[in-house]
Image (cartoon, rainbow, N blue to C red; front, top):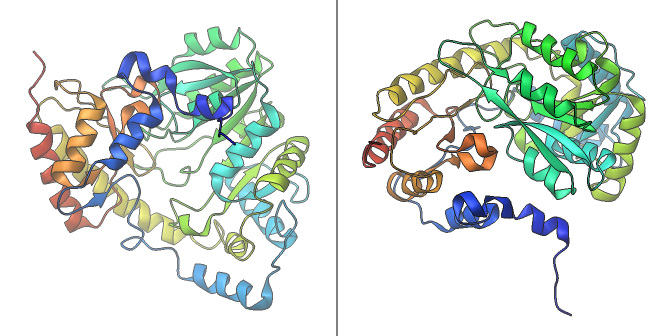
Length: 405
């Protein structure tokens, strides 16, 4: 039998990039994967969880569950006792009450939550509004399900707070999309919207029939004591918003593969239906770590914010000193999204050179949408001494490209 890939897999290959980059998305990514790494290899697409480990009680709670205190086969939407604790903790974070039995689901990481929600909602031909740039799987997941992406630029001009282009947002909403989805804080840029702008986004959506998925994975990792506004908490938005959260990044629990989604009961039920054929459940023993998440780690998170903010500032200083490179200050997350518009190089040129010559793996900007062109994403949550040396190597590679005329 000859293997013929499904149409959705062919869409996942990203053929829409052929015109601008000469290759499809996955072809570009595989080229980068095949590139041999240079000396002092360091993957800076994610955080160093050895330098920044989880809270001490994470392993304790996992081990206790694995030793007999926890169920091996939980309900698909998660252990009832854990969901009850999560509902209380998340309700306190968002300022909204959630029913643990009807409005909370535990997923194998937030990625599975996003996938399950899209699978439960999107049909081929539907329209979905997605910021540009946005999370690495947003655009490609929408295309995978056969829906049409309606992009909205993320505007972040020097000296101004980041924002979505409201005129474009309203124009796209006028096309009657089924869904709006975005990350906040924004991944890849780290942009955090002011409470006033979150309210503006909400008001635009309330004038339409669109539902919203907001990925708030980094909402506890916000710098400079800035306020953070939860979209679901805006009056009128609770019943039309799914919020995805989790401890994988801020709390260094990526290896536990656990996420949380809270939202309307009917959508949570449909997400459980999807989980029943895709993954069954989040890892049973790891679920128990969530019972103390948010409630018992505030001091830990505040220390993490201080350490990450220092690394962010160190990175900003180093990057802004490189000719042809610019970068906006990240308001949240552990990412920076440097622009190299002043260099004669493509996204792929820079990513390949950084891996080959400096041993640094970065995310090229094309992975995040057309607005990511001439950028690359880095995660600065690294060991301080290792990171200082990596920034020196990064500079040497970027300075090897000619500056734009």
